[in-house]
Length: 196
Image (cartoon, rainbow, N blue to C red; front, top):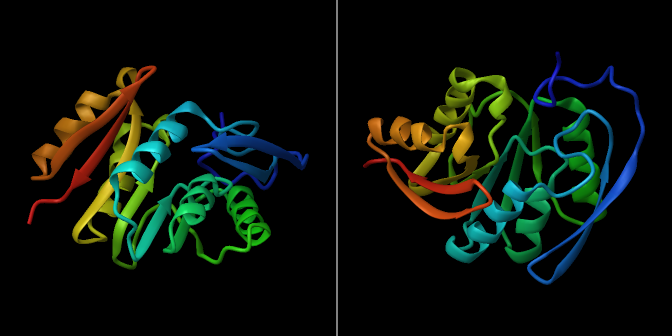
């Protein structure tokens, strides 16, 4: 069975809009079938964004890894003057992210990829695609770690029941500092800083 973290160009085209409020601001985005959390802001992403905005100093640049329709980038750009890069493997999601960034008058760089292989970032934000399996998920996140600039942070959200504790162990074994910043409704927000 195909999941959203794959090419979805063959899925029926049925565009619509989603609306949500976050940190006293209202957002409207274009969405469609075949993308992650197509009809709402999922609770994990909401918790992740609230904590990133509260805890992270606005960086000069930020990578939205597994960007989907662009929720993370649009929310962060609404609060920060930062250069955004958006990566997703799902062509439909990336097209929607471009459309949504444009309709909010935000600029960004967009890449159709399944890993991070270029650039250096002060901040990387990701709600990782758990359903692809642990090994490919860790490969994706490890590729992100290798493209953090010194002092940069990787922010992720993961359910405790989907392996949050094993994720902490994975990153600590690589010499990273891992901080559990928040938890709510079974979601853990982790701030990961590579060792020097």
